[in-house]
Image (cartoon, rainbow, N blue to C red):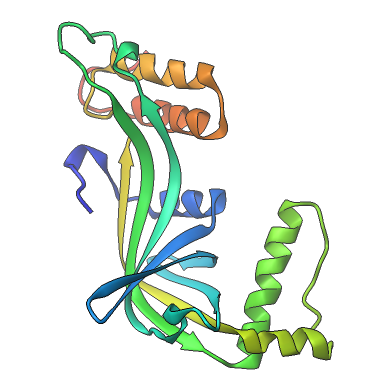
Length: 214
């Protein structure tokens, strides 16, 4: 992933935040020289630098037969940034851009057909996501019809070997430009606009380029 130095993020706590915000990822593998892509809800676990992500495919999905090297993309908030929000828009001839946060995780996929492992994945996914919508559906391990449904899926365990975090949040702009864009996004409202604005202000508060923040 192309990542200019100003936009590099190395704190894995930021990856935790991205996943906590949206644990629906893009998984990319390659077969016969062509990319194969799935969009999947996942379970995330990190212990220090060790990261393991679990999930499952529908069994007919061609990617369910893949194992080995893979790329997982974790999508963070993103927002259009108008040059009209910059303090120096005229003298610097500013142009539009897009601010965003994203993670690319490189690692190795391991697949499983084990009934107990599949049941655990489905159970944990349902507990987390049912709680998000205020409901209480549960996978019932002693129900034959629930267990039979597991035949229709293939599970995976993705062991992450390398993390790339890109947080493009106008860090390469003067403070006044960042403040103007962050304020405009906050005023526009909407989940992504506000989230990007908050991230911009967080980084502004920790700038060490001698300009300072107000």
